[in-house]
Image (cartoon, rainbow, N blue to C red; front, side, top):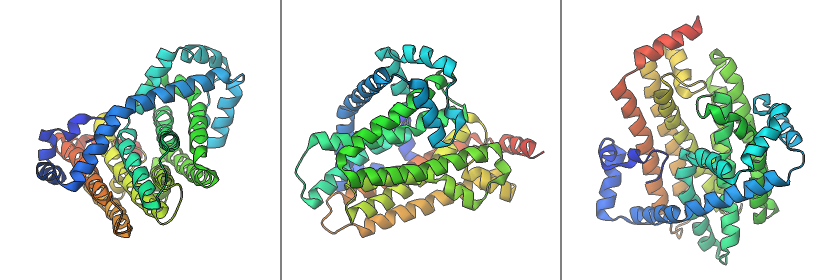
Length: 375
């Protein structure tokens, strides 16, 4: 299995959830889904360090080549619509000098690549790309494949430094470095994705625009948590839905029917994992995340424990929608068992963190913090 915390997929952890037990059963029986998934997991273990090194090299070149980094950073913050992502101009040259050291830059990249969305999707994108290439009868081009996959993984990874800057809950000593890196990360992603052609780049730009809307709503809700409602939470989740869905679409090089099917499956799986992330973050930060589905349900039920139960129910709705994509796949699509197994790992991930929350039972403390905010 793949994830930020490998203990989640240890034997003990798998035994603690129904989905985990199903995963173990498939492993013992060597099911087709298990074998396909394991193949791409091993491929990721072999290739991820190469991807990370390509990322660092591209980022180092982009930073070195820019004669006006202050303008680049300011334009990025304006385009995204969040001045929190801007870096004071007086700090720009010092940060550039620091990040011009490849070892320091490599450390920052390693930190932001330590992400569930990156670790869990790298093998998935490889599988989707291979499945689409086989279905459409494409010739093999490792260069193009690496560019498309690298570009979308890098675009997804951009959410990590942006979230850490806005949330201020991780890597506080590196936030200025992340502010500097953001526009170059986006530029590299665009450059690589463009190798897929105009249709692929257009799909990315449209998805990224919608994802920025979700990020903007996320920031606004942080400043006014009590304004949270079902509609703006759904819009907020565009930050998961559009980035992941667009990546799925482009693994088929934006060609129907697989482009639409991959989009649906990845978008809804991304939203499902988002629920699990909110539970994990609540445990890590010892409070209900703002904004989040647990917060929405807690404000409306007055019961924090019930709020997390409803969040799990919401995650299952997302996963049920993702499974509709499986029923849309062509009969001759060879990697359907892989995707079925993938969704099983997503369910386990959420169940694991929910069980961990129940085991620790911080609900009364969470309730007091929420009541204090409301006063």
